[in-house]
Amino acid sequence: MTQGYKGRIGTALRLLAVREGRSVSQEKLAERVGKRAGRTYSQSAAKGWLKGVVPSDLESQLALALELGADPGWLYFYPYSKAPAPPGADIAAAPATVELETIEEASLPVAKPAGRRKGARKKKGVQGLRPR
Image (cartoon, rainbow, N blue to C red; front, side, top):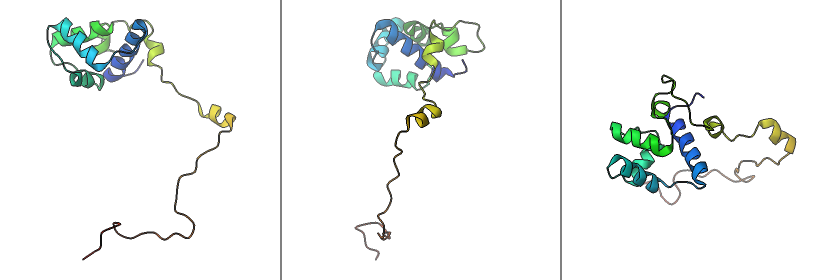
């Protein structure tokens, strides 16, 4: 598992959604972390956490990790910490990808990029504006 903090927080959030049987909104996550930390957080704060911004104070860091069900050592200090990853983290962290061979075997039609029509002239300048 060689993902950074942003990847680990995403993994922990996916595991939380699996445990609760539904996804957790940023607003709800901010509310829950704030309640645990004794503070008030906005949806934009939770958005920042999910984009990789670490909460600025220790209480909030701990509250976020506990709310996500992750060990704070794993969430913030992996690989330097020996803290274990949450159960299922290896599966939740795996990217959902399709191998190229699978696509080729399916013989799917490939879309061609849109281009100019045959014989069409290339327009010069910005359309609708005339040079002075």
